[in-house]
Amino acid sequence: MTLLDGILLTGSPSNIEPWHYGEEGHEAHAEPSRDRLSFALITHASGKKMPMLGICRGLQELVVANGGALHRQLHQTHLFQEHREDDSQPLEQQYAPAHLLQPEPDGLLSQLLGSAAAFAVNSLHGQGIRESGPQLRIEARAPDGLIEAVSLRQHPFALAVQWHPEWQSDRDPVSRRLFEAFIHAAARYHKEKQP
Image (cartoon, rainbow, N blue to C red):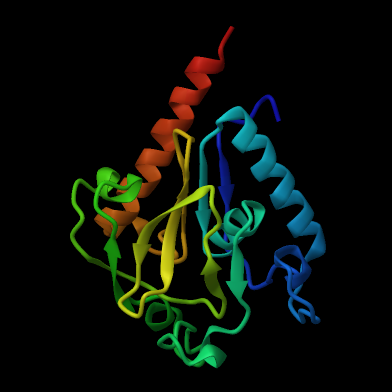
């Protein structure tokens, strides 16, 4: 861990076991070993103020690790639009922009983007944030009100997003800015931890 300068919490087809956020029931797509590893990484990185960027499941991990909770099946709540991809479509369509996202003014995300203007994101998730938790700041919401980006308070760079910025990131200015900011934060962390 001493060699790390940042943690990238990636997406995955698996879901966090519900007992981690106070719910009962079986999770068919659970990955308990990933849950344990991700929560340990988040705890370590939070304590060391190491930069973190969470993507999709990575956002959900950051939320749950900080006392938040998830909607296990967004489409069954009838509160939100459909956020799952149509896996019968080609990847280009599955990862195409699906809705706008509105950043919160004065948040880390709007600061990184240089604007609080809405921007388009893809949407490939069946779960979503129900409660963000007290240590997290809401950074952006979908038009239906679903929280789709959060940051960790009292941390120089711990940002997580529900969409997949890695998809064709070389063509998307928002994605590029996110990854550039994460890389710069990791470089600063590396420089500051040197003896």
